[in-house]
Amino acid sequence: NAGVTQTPKFQVLKTGQSMTLQCAQDMNHEYMSWYRQDPGMGLRLIHYSVGAGITDQGEVPNGYNVSRSTTEDFPLRLLSAAPSQTSVYFCASSYTLEGTDTQYFGPGTRLTVL
Amino acid sequence: GQQVMQIPQYQHVQEGEDFTTYCNSSTTLSNIQWYKQRPGGHPVFLIQLVKSGEVKKQKRLTFQFGEAKKNSSLHITATQTTDVGTYFCAGRGGGSNYKLTFGKGTLLTVNP
Image (cartoon, rainbow over all chains, first blue to last red; front, side, top):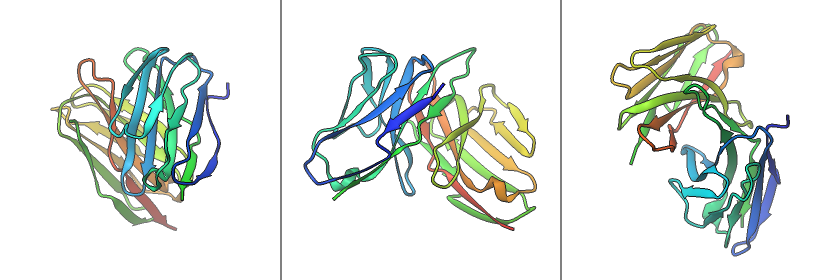
């Protein structure tokens, strides 16, 4: 199993450009989430999905879109990049088994918006 | 909304000293999870606590969940250089609220 994979690992954008961060998992997990991590801010939830076709907003959803057409993939779209979106983005997947819901994180995408 | 506070933000210790980080939630939690992130890496799950007053141990790490299910702590005995990293708590709300709220983390550095 590859676990949770994210592409690209690094990306530099200019203000106003759009792009999609890719996330895929091969563990057949129902739940997937996107977080951003900024210095001193911890991990903040952007969007999450509880299954294919179902998504919902997290704590900081503005400027981002998601969709979940398959169980495996959960792409994050930046509609018009802004310098405030410079951050490290982590995708995570999880499932619930006997009350345990471990989050498995991908390696992250380091995004810089100029 | 649900808030999870974690202190301290930073902790520097000499190798062999103990370390504790504390987590407090504004609301009652259904469970609390702890993660470790090495510098430049991604968060890795350590443990989940579910029951009121629960205590779990993993070698030198001791995790506690408060009686009211609103606070938690992670204690490391006799720190080693391999313990370096940021420790995050994450609280899941009750009911059908799936959202997991992370604390801001405690960065632990260990002087050999």
